[in-house]
Image (cartoon, rainbow, N blue to C red; front, side, top):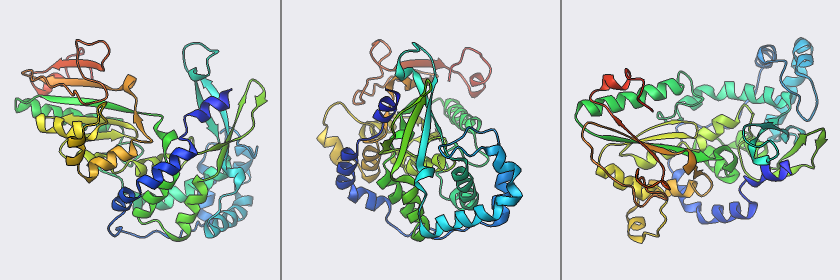
Length: 381
């Protein structure tokens, strides 16, 4: 029961094949142009493996191989050479062992009625040895990826955090209020974003960023043919195929997701965007920004005129949203103003109308200057 529910959020395989066939031209355009760098081979040193072994948390839960982390850490000096050879062999042949791609999922209760499966969060337990290799790979790629990740992204990146994202948003709001302008901040939440990542498109993304050769082959093996089983109440289910997602609770999963959505901020180039992984804030300052947003975000109606005027980046946004959709229950709008200039986003899948209880939550915050954003406790962001 748990495994069926947790697997239901994945994109079905037939839908993945259909989307891949109909969006090849857009993916090719995204990948067009010469990448700034080429990353085709990677090898790890004994010192890298030893450092990783001695720095990881030995109390991590066991994966499907049932090798305790504490034993790995205590015997670090003795097993470093063997692990280094194993890791380099995996990278050279471009193959990730099937055992490393099997996740043991444990349901963790969130809230609500305990007998409902949807009130549980899946926590994936992966092989610790596999995560050690992922950590070594990420350490090697970290510098190169810093030059790739969109500057609007604040999640899981060096020297950035949710605090820097908040500072950027507040700074933008304050400057516009000082100029006597109104700004609408749209808070978008992507529904099951990490679970919806299309593996074929993810490989296309990596290729466009300069990944090729044996390293790209390794990532293909890493993403594809993954399986999961669920352990709950003393019983373990049969394993099922994971048709989409970046591996949750993995080391490389978060950075792969950032690369997957790296183009999204450019889809609305006229607006200021701040993102933290799948959390997105759109700052709309005038009617032109609103019109662009109407073109980009999905509409209830089939507006062929608007679709014909949408540029490539707009189609890119819509294409990626076939797998990653908005969570309207967690999305909202906040208006910061000196003088109200109402604008209703009537072509969004939901209209922002404060008088209609069926629409998104709307919060209007009256601010006279940037200082008032920080002082009154009644302000809500």
